[in-house]
Amino acid sequence: KKVVWSEKNDRYLMKYLLPLSIVNSVVILINMIRDFGYATMNLPMLFRDLLTGILNMGSSYAEHNARLAQLSGAELFGGSIMTLFNLLWGFAGFNILLLDLYYFKKSGIWLKVITIISCLETIVFYVAIGTNIGVFRIVIATAVFYVLNAMRKSCFAKNGSKKTSVRKMLLAGAAAFAVIVLYFVSTMKARGGDVYWSLQYCNIGGIGLDMDSVLFRICPESLYMAMISLSGYLTQGLYGFSMCTQLGWHPTFGLGNSMGMVDLISKHIVDVGSHTYQYRVQEAFGWDQKVQWCSMYSWIANDVGLAGVIIVMFFIGFLLAMIYRDSLTTENPFARILMVYFAIMCIFIPCNNQVMQSTYTLFSFLTALLAWVLTSRIRVLLRK
Image 1 (cartoon, one colour):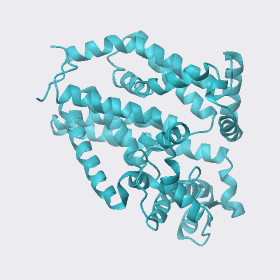
Image 2 (cartoon, helix red, strand yellow):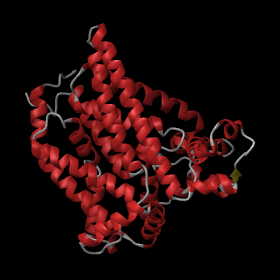
Image 3 (cartoon, helix red, strand yellow):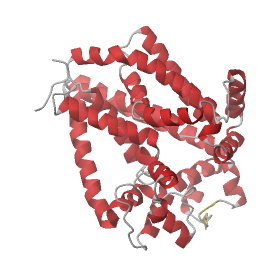
């Protein structure tokens, strides 16, 4: 039975959001300490390393990857208990941050403060380690909520208001795109990307630059590095997928669509990784599974084969249509935050299965999906 989300349900949900957001903010801070390799709480050193990372993202990015390769969760602040807690908190963490952003206008002063702190913690940390995705998530979420709100107003507005809503949507989309591209280019430059074109050194999996390309003739030299980085990110995944089509299918029984789950299960339970397309493409063609991408399609293909990707993509589109409709015609917050997940998923289709890439977003996505079903189709979570 279809259920109607009411303002009473908003108040009921927001009553628990402040304490959950405080815990989430503390968890983000603890994980920052762990990611910088500390075994104890050392805030002065953390602030120093964050500042150093912001000023020199390139070296911080390399050092961060080296740290993670050398240290285990048991050696870091909080030890194995925090590692297990993070795994369980993954079912809620990102959803709490998304709900904070969604309810920001309606929330009280303390929730607003905690929301700002959580967002700043996330942005500062990802900037300090020279990584893009954490910043992208917040920018995409903010833009999606703004656009959905403008679209909803546009659906029920008169002609004059509708034009204003359309302009707001276009402006929000353009602003989000500009922020993402500018930040992406700055991180690539910090990692040394600005020397690639001039030294003709850049290659992705053994494929170098075509300096005779028409793009090099029509673009000014100042845009070369941005053009190379963006084209590399948008095409290498599809090229990796093309290699998958030359290999047979080894089923992974529903466990192979997430890099985070593949690593976790292969490390502690059974070797799933060696059956994935990514591993076998690396073995056959030297396409590094940890450096180069193979697109979202190849991750789905691990479980269902190449032909099965078509069926899965159809169902993803069907589910997206239902959620998109609910996000415009109802007040259900879980429909809105699911639109953020699907926006991230669709943007990264050529690159990787981004939502399923880590357990942090995978578990939160599954929780949000279940919450949407239980608050839009089944009368379970809503108070009478």
